[in-house]
Image (cartoon, rainbow, N blue to C red):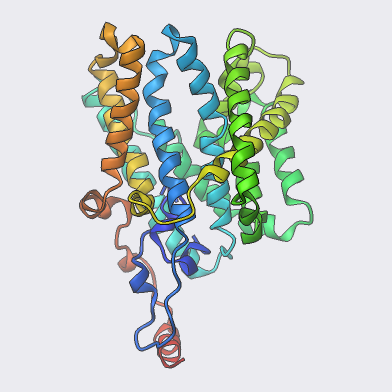
Length: 382
């Protein structure tokens, strides 16, 4: 998940420009020679990203177990209704400062485009060699597995100036998502179907302000979130045989889901409403103080992209064919293992080991701003 998945990898002032994903030590945000106090990171967003990435890993671990358990399927449906919308909202919130300036474009290329190319090729080779699919093509136009989110972030962020300029950005983004469900011809190129259907959540994040997040941090919101989530889980369990939960994946048109065309726009609005309520409840539960896992929120892009190799490796090795994994205790064990793996992949040692791929140094590829030295000297004196 790109700069925004790892937007907490940056100091707040850089976050406003930038998962997921991207990573910059808070200490490095202090300009050399400046005597001004350093801004503190908001632990709330790091906590939210870590908890969301754990749910992403759990959801991927539940996929092979859905056919044998209605309960697992209900949990899967519930989690998919809000975990990627939550990431998209956070991504939009920390993209508010994107103005398409040369410096922001450089960061976008370095933090999103380059990791996309690296991991798209890596996943394709992994599928060829480990997945025994030698004919699988390597294509940068057809995002494989988890890389779609990097592709989405690139497109969303490039269009940020448009959403900031128009009068009604969220209704316009919803209209784009609704129209996308009517067009199966969009195809797999850049995974545009999913990019457009998740677009409203990103645009919603662009429209949010700090005071909006303060509302969900109130005790009343946390208390109310408990019965809401309980009712949502019960509703998901009831809906399993009655509804195609692929609507929450936002990756197919209405026709591809064997539904009448008019279902697409209606389900876009319905799922957006459901997801918005659940995202709000999720944020209400996110701790506000610094905890043991807060630091891991700065490495969610690492956990997101790297855990895919573990999941696909288990799939290619037929680990999920073990009968005991399809029992209740097996499902619990798989969930705990997935959470442990993605947690380990978010740790600082892993970040240091894979920084060359996630946050490559590409200054050599860009022309230096001729006035940058003078600007840096002025900044250092203020």
